[in-house]
Length: 193
Image (cartoon, rainbow, N blue to C red; front, side):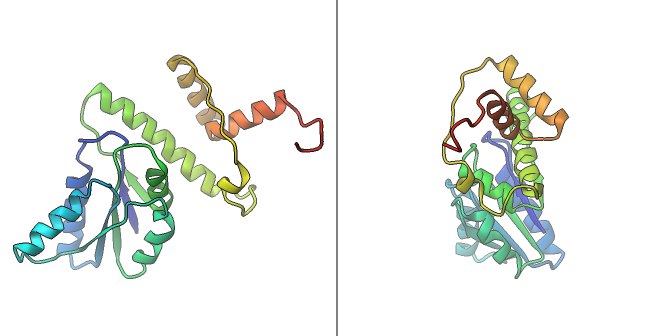
């Protein structure tokens, strides 16, 4: 099983929880690998300090802070009972890659409005990433092969919230819902250009 601890907000305890979860499984004699996918490398630093002090190793720690994580984590999982991914504190290709690699995602948060807002955004990303991987109607081409242009639109926070709620209620991603809207409003009239 691959478990990722992710939140776009820093300082919520991702590293601490990832280390404790890996340590718990290690004490149960499980084969565990912790992937430090945070460019800051705190889990790697922790592991090096333990090795330097000659403390027992309950699990291995690997630095893998790159956006190919979703392809590499399953390879590491073949030699482990559990893989724990400690993710980066921001939305980026690396965080999305960790989402795609994970069988389960834990979203640590502090009890504050700021963490609540960041967690809500993270939950939306989880739903979007997992819905896309379950969508068998899309061809086997990757999203980057299908969509090569992006569009930025400035909207109010209230409209953004209404769009996300509508997408959730429809059981689709915001991106897919907006693509359908734009396709409907701007039909292909010149043969696909």
